[in-house]
Image: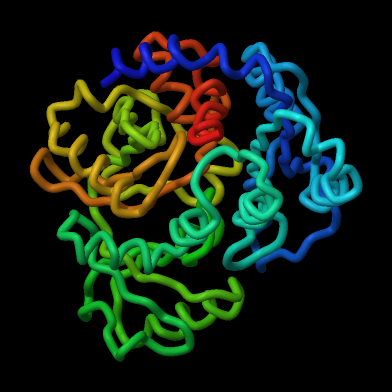
Length: 352
């Protein structure tokens, strides 16, 4: 699969020379005053100025015709609406990681707008982007397809259908629409009892969204980047995450908001771990097929043992800058950082 990805890039990268790229990203420094959750800043998901420059630098290596930059969804949309005649005569690709605001659907705005304006955009379609940000729905779809997922329950003022964790069951509490561990703190791992409902209800109110209680899996944290085209799926490499450079197993630890915010985690090649099971490749492939994901994506796991692993999350638009599992995986298979940008952009040109 990795050799095939090399071939795919060799055959297709020249197409990019004719295109202008519009980059739409939120940055911490340019962000206007925004609605927040109590104790958690949504700008955690935004790029720092250094990260933003890195994104621009990576895309600049793709020999594009031109690059234009927008640091908010509104500025991009206004530009398109005010220059529609000019836009129709341009070969455009839009890359967006923008997600201003809180709650459901916010990352689908730019893909949906591009679809309306018939402008090629990177990654998955708006429905899939929203679906994959809804942790409970994603979990239940995968569960129904007999893919390995942890038992998961939904609380939104009350437990859905009255179903809740067993007494003394260890669960991790997560808000259903967030990434970058927003809403996950040191108190998110609990042993459930009826008394837990008070804390879960407070989280439900503070985060302004439903909360899932997900069966906690003690063991390894693994992110599996995958590249999806119309005709092929290229699983790249399973990347382990740890909180210490000297200890690969997370054990009872997990990535909380603080660890993500301050980049306090490390990467390693999980393929060489004795607990790696090659069946994970098939699980990744079936997951992206079922959910309809496209472009450069990621499937996340907790691994208890070689034959005991679970999908805990998916991402349609994962970070790919230096401190990311995507970047680490590409280096390990001897693909340059520019190949990351090429993969992202080429996903927009299929069918064009």
